[in-house]
Length: 158
Length: 422
Ligand SMILES: Cc1cc2nc3c(=O)[nH]c(=O)nc-3n(C[C@H](O)[C@H](O)[C@H](O)COP(=O)(O)O)c2cc1C
Ligand code: SF4
Figure 1 (tube, rainbow over the protein chains, first blue to last red):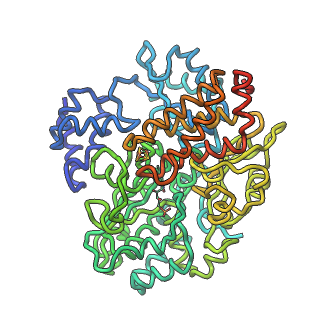
Figure 2: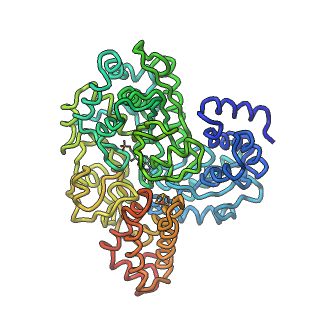
Figure 3: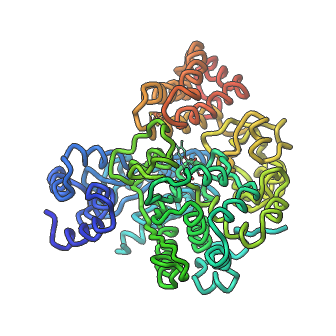
């Protein structure tokens, strides 16, 4: 359900754009900030709000890496799997994540805390390997450093 | 050595505020432009400076700005391409995080020159720090009346918006970017008519890379002759070069355009890490052809790199060492390109996953001798001129050059039925 607050934020966005449809990427991001992901029902509501058909909006939503069409955990871990991080050993980091969080890329931990997703080059190549948790960038990763970072999030840093 | 673009940036520090930027001479160029220059005069200065686009294609900026036809309809749009999703590239991030007003000032001058009154900075979602610094800079610029209506009482108006994309490499391509801003699925299309005639909302639109625009205030302040003396080639200016891979000191450096590969890799980046040898380099990011040892003295400018068989691209290079598998590296790259293909053209949509699958099979010891021919054919079928945009030919550049320079490695994968590096 789109709340009044969400609708106000959407309207502020629409105000800035030429057409209602032109606000759709921002709109998806706004709603996702509130709800965590975009369900079919939410997608239909947003489409309606923007005078788009659900199919048109789906064509946009599925086009982008950061619009989640499936539920995600409380924190999203985005591990860069592009070329420089690969050269610098990201496979070892991914192996470590699999072993310690017991999830594969695309999955969420059973406690709902973390979702693991691969992501394209984060532009941190001089300090590879790199990952993001939610909107925060972490670089020069090692398995030990990864454990520290994750522990901080478990302890309630959000 | 002069470093106009980065001289005031504190690595890892806070971005320059508007007050700090002004104290260093910031917005003086804009004041001069709005106070005493016609758009035509600004255009002449930028053209004479021989500034070429830093976004990958190296198109002369003056020529691009001039291609908005006289009397073309309004409103006109000016877009900053700050999507920077090319693997290996991280230069625009540094400029935007460190000195956002330099970009905003360049953007305002550019917009004035082509008489655009609306502008968009198109930035990738992942650049959270740069998003923040730019958002603040835009707010500050509005407060100080460098943006908005009747800027500095000149009669010139400009509204700027920050658009945060949701993550897709193809959106950095001009025609896809414009569709993305309209809320359509971002599929590129043929460039007829040119975007400078009919771009965003069918109106004349100029698209420039972030680094390109950062040069503009300095060209206005110091003149085109000064700008040309900064470089070691016919094109003007410095370049933000980057290098990553197993070097002693991966990083970014602002150097004269035309600095040699060897100087950048050996002196700036300190050479290879202990026990490793240099094998090759993608000089301009993921979509450029490998260069090898014999090319180390090539000057990193547009024409020299092209003559050597590759492209300057973004100028951010990725180094291959002798303990990293070239087949694995190219597999990683083709996997990226296959994922990021928008799917519009058949050769790209079908060919890239095919190339990635073959490379994966080679890595897993299931390669066959004929696979190398198939890969070779694909580099032709996805080459320049066969697709709507440059993604597919760009994707083929590292593959084609790897087949040439590292053929023995591919053959070893087939012969030994395994990756020799694992
Ligand atoms: C697939 C693809 C992705 C691109 N991504 C970017 C990008 O992220 N940033 C950029 O400045 N240019 C990018 N470009 C190049 C732009 O299309 C365009 O050439 C450039 O922004 C023009 O600016 P310039 O003349 O200042 O270099 C991309 C091109 C292609 C084909
Ligand atoms: S070359 Fe690939 S990315 Fe470019 S338009 Fe065609 S399918 Fe899309």
